[in-house]
View 1 (cartoon, rainbow, N blue to C red):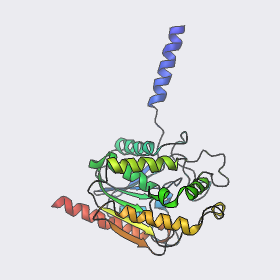
View 2: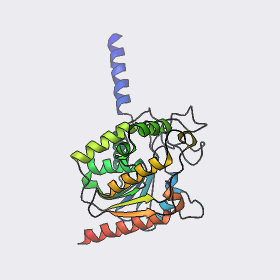
View 3: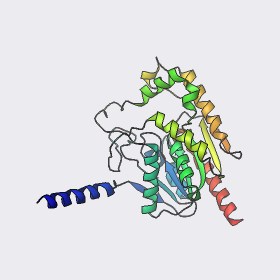
View 4: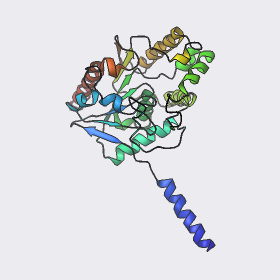
Length: 285
C-alpha cells in the first residue's frame, strides 16, 4: 500500500510539473516576418484588436500586409473589469523571465513562423527586449511603444520610485479579489539592466515610439508623485532606449498619452509596415 501511495504521489507530482496553462493566441494574415504584439502591464490583447474613437484597429491593419499574432498573458484584463484574460489563470507574482519563456513556448507549440518582428507596449517593451536577448536568431526587429525603460528607476530617484511602486500594486476597483497580473518592478529593472549589460541588443532594426502628451497619473498618485518628475524621468528613459541602437528611429506621438494604440494607431501601423519592408528588402540582398 505504501509503495502504491509513493508511486501515485510521483505520478501526480510529475504531471503537475509538466502541466502548462492554456494560453489564448490569435493569428491572422500571411507573410514574413511574423509580427508579435505584446501588451503592457495587466493588459490583455484587446488593446491591439479594438477600434477606438474611429481609429483603425492595429491587429487587422497589420494582417493586411503580413502575418500577425496576439495573445493574452494570464491574469490580465481588457477594456472593462468584466473582460478577463482568455488564458488560464496562474499563480502570482511572476517574473519577467517566466513571461518570455511562456511566449516562446506558445509560439513554438503553435508553429508560428520565424523570424519575429516584436512590438511591445509599456512593460511589454521589456518582455520583447528580453526575448530578443534570449533568442536573437528568432528576432528580426523591435518596435517599442511608449515602452517602460529600465533607467526609469534611477531617473525618478528613491523617494519617487517608492511612490511609483505604491501606485502600481493595487488592483483596479472591482477586481480586488481577482488574482490580477503582478510583477515586481524592482525585479524587472534589475533583470533588464543585467541583460543589457551581458547581452546587448542584437544588430536589428529598432523603432522607439514615445508619447508626446503628459500622462494622467491615477488619483492616488497626486500627493506622492509629482507629474513633472514622473514625466521627466519617463522621457529621459525614452531617450536612453533610442541609444540601444545607432540606427534607431525615434517617433514622438504628438497627440498621445501612454496608450498610443488608442489615439494614433496609424503611427504604430506605419512603423511596423516600414520595418516589415526593411526586413524583407534586407533578406533579398
